[in-house]
Amino acid sequence: MGRNWVLIVGARPQFIKASALCKAISEHNLCSVNKINLDILHTGQHYDNEMSQIFFNELEIPSPKWNLHCDSSDVNLMSNKIIDTLKGENIDKIIVFGDTNSTLSGAISAETLNIPLAHIEAGLRSFNLQMKEEYNRIETDKRSKWLFAPTSVAVKNLENEGIRSGVYNVGDIMFDATKHFSKVSDKKSNILKTLGICPKEYYLVTIHRAENTDNINILRDIFIALGRIDTFNIILPLHPRTAKVINSNIDIQNILSNKKNIKITEPLGFLDIMALEKNAKIIITDSGGMQKEAYFHNVPCITLREETEWIETIDSDNNILCGHNIEKIINAINHSFSMNPISEYGNGDSAKKIIDILIND
Image 1 (tube, rainbow, N blue to C red):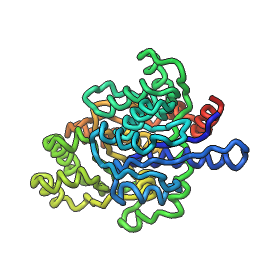
Image 2: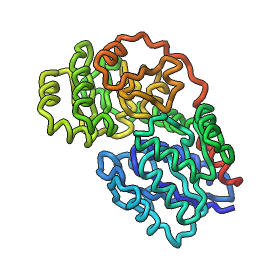
Image 3: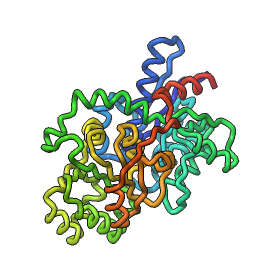
Image 4: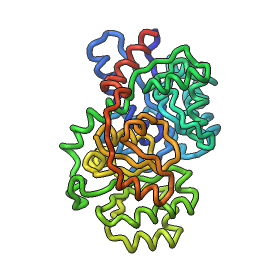
């Protein structure tokens, strides 16, 4: 059974999940004679220091063996670079996470090189085919030998698409990472003191998805809604894509200049983000991963999208979908969330389950 594995990552959520997998592999190697050799290929999709290297440093992830510095949105170009890099290497399995261009590029490369593929977070569906992430998920699942689903809903989605072989419900690997790094952030993050804010007296806001940032009318509506919030501070770590749009739009600049309670920061490391998440009164985001992180920290979430892959967070009244509708966002802020428990995400041992399956197959 081959144990030369390559993990392909490229974006923030993948670094976080990679940390949980790397930690579990290290623990396996400490107590087993059958060692796993894991090499990391970083596509460079998030290529600047704030969005990439700081996460490797904080999350205790081994340095990538290959860093392609490929910040391209062209999946074919990225795939070709991965194929050229891995061609001739002794690789038994390729592992990818989630739904980014790096994910699909890794899947295409594995198929081309005839290397079995494992997809972590398989089966997630928003059912919005206009989202490139939805296309990436579907095409990656089609190419995967092992499909590690985080929930029973994800398993059902795969069944509905005729995919039953190699499907495993292992829980959510993000829960593994959150359990571990929540304690680390308590010790290492001073972000609340730095920003001069107190727990439960601010809203944490993140905006980065193309459907929000690439349409100026949509982004303006979101900032109009944020501009109506007077009761609490708003902490807004600004994604480079969002910053670029704001810097070119005078209307949004005027909203921000007139609202002293909106505090903009540079992109932050994971430990600082985690500290902000768990101490927020409400999280307002268009991030898929942050919807779950909000739940893990027992913080209500308002999602700036029309759909979500994490339907459990909606059904349990931990999360509300608002899109960019101004009144919906304001009404959601005033909503009394039930914060019901979700049993779907496992016990924080998803990475171990994944490794156990892969080393025995």
